[in-house]
Image (cartoon, rainbow, N blue to C red; front, top):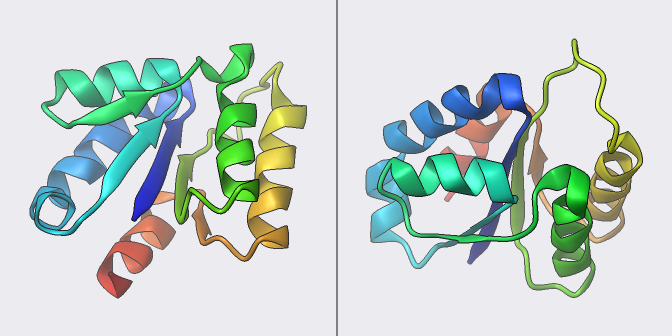
Length: 120
């Protein structure tokens, strides 16, 4: 199972904390993590094995959207910061739309992500 993890700058620490809370599940299941570049850098530093793609504003969100469309990515955890403006918002919306089109679970906050992890 491939899970994409993405976090806006103000949510990266929260993503690392979330992954640490679910470390046993992530390590004991056959789960592959992929991530946008900067989020992946923080997650890798925290000790997780993650495949880093481009940074979100440089095309990482679009790369993950493509993996969703190709049927390679099975779940997306995207901790968005709704109070900040993001220059790559069209890519974010495309990713969210493709998750809906291809029926891929998408969590945009820790509470929803926690429910998805419990479902695994």
